[in-house]
Length: 414
Length: 145
Image (cartoon, rainbow over the protein chains, first blue to last red):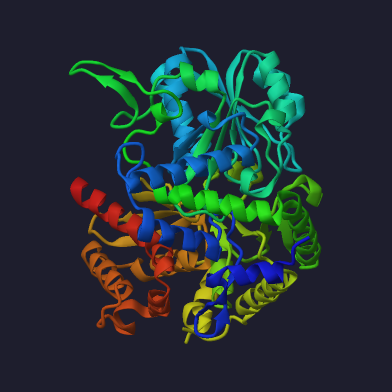
């Protein structure tokens, strides 16, 4: 098992101080993670030594860049248990991957009256693309409710799956931390004749992910939430689905032969990679995958359960603080959203920022979920491999300071 | 940068005990605004009489202390003023939020307490939310009159 205090040393940004002399405490990992030296060096090395476009030039650098880019694809395929690198499409982000599925698969396959199931805990990025596509095709969105303790309501499953064409479900909620039972959902969805699209933006960085065991049909993931560069991410899909889908974006690279009024398309995954791809970022994501493999995803998960257990224990000691989502740390990821009585999350985030802590306040791109929870916003602390008990203690101390700031008596106007 | 500059006691007082926080169903100014970033949500109501005087002003909504205190102070500051005077207050408030020197306590009263927000750029949106609603309400009023 790795020691997060040692892991921290690999992340140069964690050395810095903010607001004068306050050590940075990074607790916004569900939004983006920091980058280890190895990933930063990889980007510098690419631009200093190998920068070239891929798949085109016949010169040495083009070959090197292509080899690095395709090597990263193979690493990612292996990381999520894909049967081959043909099934990995590089995209800019999980959001782009979800839009790819909604547009390429959705527009070709949805008809008026078809049902698209979207859970109430989805991020806007797995909801809005489906709103756009259902509005264009005449299909309809069916919400899948959640239970009071933050799980998918499995009793509602037969009802929502009845007549569904696709089920859009997060592997792990970015607000509640809930880990969804993807295999169970996929088995039931397939029995009902529906495909399953998994938003793995939160899950892939934190959980052991194996698409073969998941039995889903599409998995969108983000690179920058798993130590990789911003602008990296991807989509895994079954090869036969990718083969059958029309392209999403058109341009260079995705074609075979082009005439003025029509074209034939490249094989997968290149059919879905129009234009010069995010070459350096994708190679950097490969370096992040190497780093995570060296830590070991089983240990990444074990560390997360351990730190969330500690955080939940400490936060529950604070009067008037309510934590959302599952109570059992083994059923949730490293995301802890909470509400503190008499203190709006936005005020709270500002105050803890002055202590050097980066936490998130707001609706976390999940407004429908905020309505279900009955709150306008939440505060959210989210953990990763470099977070320690000290970070949790700093959070608890900063929350105390927030409360003190707001407890000042209503004295005279200044 | 001190937290006390941001969370002045007068702000906390307006947050804890908001003034004029109620619904007005007058057919006068009635504008809703929200800040999708953080979920702050404000509706500003102003009753304007035939002579162009704001005889009543109120707000409803939810959000952080800055957005709620700003709305509360807004209602106190504009009540009893003529619409063109209110426009001047809006302008002065915006100047203060832009960090411009000039408008002081004479023009802005309690609202000067919000000056500290300028040092927290991400929170300026919270402070001006109610003012955005008011400004839109005034321009709707002026179009109709």
